[in-house]
Image (cartoon, rainbow, N blue to C red):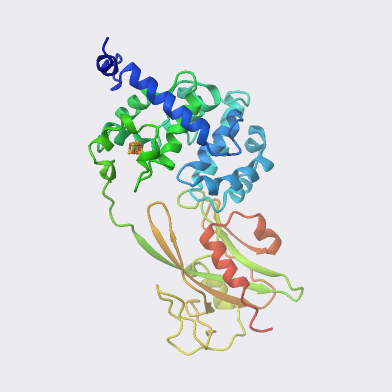
Amino acid sequence: MAERDRRTQRTPGTAPWSREELQEIRDGLLAHFDAEARDLPWRGDPDPYRILVSEVMSQQTRLETVVPYYRRWMERFPELADLANAEEEEVLALWQGLGYYSRARNLRAAAREVARRYGGRLPDREDELRTLPGIGPYTAGAVASIAFGRPVPAVDGNVRRVLARLRNEPDPSPPTLRSWAGALVDPHRPGDFNQALMELGASICSPRSPDCHRCPLGRHCAGREAGRVEQLPARRPRGPVPHSHARVLVLRVSAGDGVDRYLLRRRPPRGLLARMWEFPEEGLLSCILRDAPTGLPDAPTGENTPTESGSSRGDAAFFGDDASGGNRGLPLEPVDHLFSHRRVTYHPRLVPLPPPPPAPPAGSGEGDVFKWVDETGLADLPIPVAQRLILAMARAIPDPRG
Ligand code: SF4
């Protein structure tokens, strides 16, 4: 058979590549991976639990960020049973700073399911993995292929970009992507192949300015041949991100023993930042503020309104009593935080109170709790990044009463 005929002979089924093309793509990509793969702590260790943790942590997060979290996690929860038996609060505390906290909650829930249903051993089939909390098609494919050597695809955002460019297809559907990735995956080294494809998308085939000259798939890339690489895949239109503001109060009691205590609230068990601890919004604290004198000097009217561009703190830093608490305390710098689908600007104010700490407000229901926490306790609680920034600002300000 002539060279050209052999190269264009298609494999049966849905694969858009000939057998020879498939082999060239697999060999080229795996050789590149063998030479260039990043040294990551979970590579070379096929322990399914470790692969699962690394895959969940890596979702929407840069690998450089993941590595120290992964190491700390494995020190604390080296086995699946350690995670299954851990308190949720400790799991969230270890995850703080990584964001998307539902991943941590689901990981713990999945570990408990595996302990209960599978005797502590992760199932090796994609369909069984997908029945576990938080495990979707991508994670199931990654774990099944990397940890168990199953020849199944794993399509994340990086793989979508590489495949769209390879096929010169602006917006391939999820089933199409899965069928392409499934046709490509190397039956002898499926885990390495899937990692190689992801890593190609994360490094060489980047969203902007891909380095096609270094790409092991260059000669098979229809998007490159068509000169359309920069337009592939098509960007999905995004609506405006909702933006809200929250006025929060940092109530602090500085006792004579030099230990500061802060009033924190645990958020309800469902919704954004579920069960994480935060400084309460001022509307929840009016009962405390109404009864508790601060002993702080009054401030001139009009210097207490936070702005989006920065703190309104002036020379007259402290503000007088107000029955609602709205004009109390020292304005700190606003903190802007982008969640997955919304943006919140926090406008914090520091309110020093004399000892003893007043009784915390009653929460609104299940899991909604207020409590005074000292420095030791702060280290152990899951507190989101934006709230940690507020805490750092408050810590830097000494008690104005000396
Ligand atoms: S040739 Fe360029 S566009 Fe095509 S897969 Fe490689 S890096 Fe991506």
